Length: 129
Image 1 (cartoon, rainbow, N blue to C red):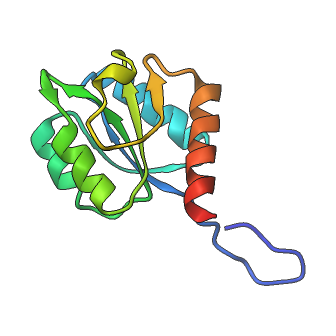
Image 2 (image 1 turned 90 degrees about the vertical axis):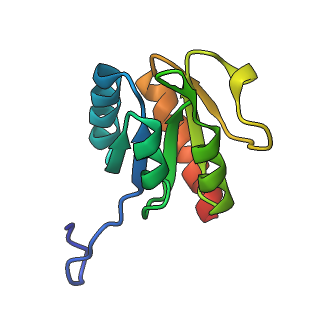
């Protein structure tokens, strides 16, 4: 809670993100980066089955690895996109591996914190107007 000049305390709404990444150390590093930037990571998954459940939860933006232990993330990405929730793909494979029909930014692994920050801000700004 932050004080507002001349007014009551107001709660600042933080963007709620989900993170789907199968490399545990990379997932922890990304979660720390996101939280340090002020985002709220409301769920994380490293397996396709868990990611499918997470895709139905309440969040503002998804960061998705394209490949979870050899399984492509397409089904999860299409479920999230159908809900109108923005996606950022995080991959070591580049643009050529994106699911068909989904236009979303691609962030190369490992993530540069400043690039991550600017892409997140641009995607969330575009969503909210």
